[in-house]
Image (cartoon, rainbow, N blue to C red):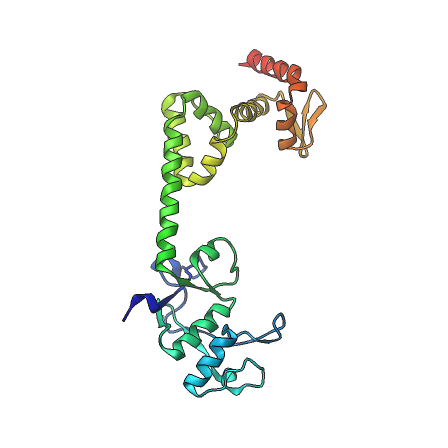
Length: 265
C-alpha cells in the first residue's frame, strides 16, 4: 500500500473541563462523532465534497446515484463515524474516497493543520493530517527560531534592556545577566514576535523604551488611552504618542523629556 494514497484524520485535543487532554484524549472512551452531507445554501445542493467529474466517475464505478440533491436517499443514510484516534483512509478505495470528500466539506474537519492554526476552521474537532505539510511547518518553525536566536546573539546589553521595556517587562535589574535571561525567555516563548520587535528601526525602539521609562517615573501619564505631559496631550493613544515623539518637528519636546528623565534617575 502506497502511503501517498493515505489520508490521516486526527482528533483535535483541546484543554477542556474534563481534563482528558492531559492523557492525550479528546473525548470519553466509546464516544464518537458522525458527519453526513448537509444542504449548503451557498451552493444550492448537498455539501458532499465531490466535484462533478468525481461524482459521475464514482457513480458509474459503484453503480450508485451520488447526485447531491436533498431527495437522494443514499446521502440521507451515508455517514462517516469519527473516533478518538488517528483514522486512516485510502483514496484508492472508492468508498473511502467518498468519505474523504465528505470530510473535507465538513466545517468540523480542518483540511490541514496549517489552516486550523490560522483560524480557518473555528468549529473543527478533527484535522486532516498531511505528513509533508507538517514537515514543512516544522521546518518553518525551526527557521524562525534560528533567525530569532541569531538576531538575539547580536544584541548589546543596552539594546536588550531597551527591548525588554518595549515588551513591557519590568527591569528589576540592569545587569547583563538579567537582560540576557529575561529577553531570551521572550525569544523562546514567541520567536516570531521577538523578530518583529527587535527588527524595528533603532529610533523607534529607543522612543518606545523612553516612553516606558517616562511612564514609570510619572513624567508621562495616561488618561483613558491618551498620553499627557503636564496636562498637554501628545498622543491620543500609544502608537500616536510614539509617532509624535519620532517626528523631527517635535525633537525639542523629545530632548526635554529625556532631560526630565535624567534628572529623576
